Image (tube, rainbow, N blue to C red; front, side, top):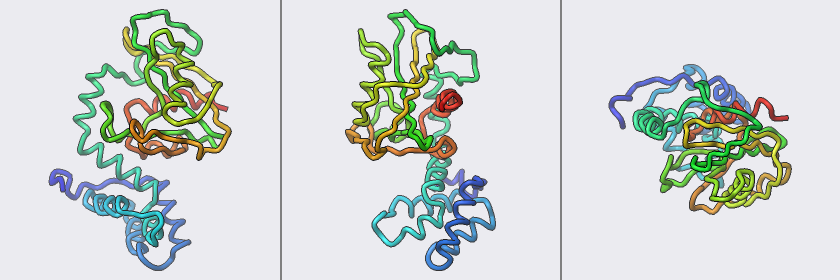
Length: 254
């Protein structure tokens, strides 16, 4: 256990406390109740307690009889919150250096942004990002492999590079098909960001109205997927700028 973080306390988000409270009405007795009541009473959690709960989450088998303990500990919301906080504390410096090295900027800084402008800079590196939204306003995220060259084991949006001679929208549909197996042929909004002189990002907001379980991963580049509401994504251990993209695009989604 990291001695520098020992006894550090974290405020548990209101959404998680409300979730645990609801679970107590479902499971008023048995394994996990004592911990749930302690969490609700304190509203905080120490680093070492987070590690203990994480170990329980990691060993959880959905087909076992441990579901009660899992849900009383906060379920997927608490799991995402813990993963995020542990990652931030242990790897914060490393990630910060990585972001600076990639020339990334926050969307609040001055960048070139437009829905309709067309860039003719053939020397710039072009990337596409797909924000896929279902009828329940949930966004599709994929979890990168632990062997990925960039941001391993992080949650991200679907996307990738534009090939030579390829139109960005065609690259978007191709990446969606390759990474998820979904066939999408239209989008509702497009944004173009030029963060640096040699990098252009095309962000497409796409509606998906079919069965959300149709997602098929290759299990090489991405090893897991999930449909999340915007307010849930902040608890995940995700790649840089992901929330910026979602906040930018989701305000015009209907």
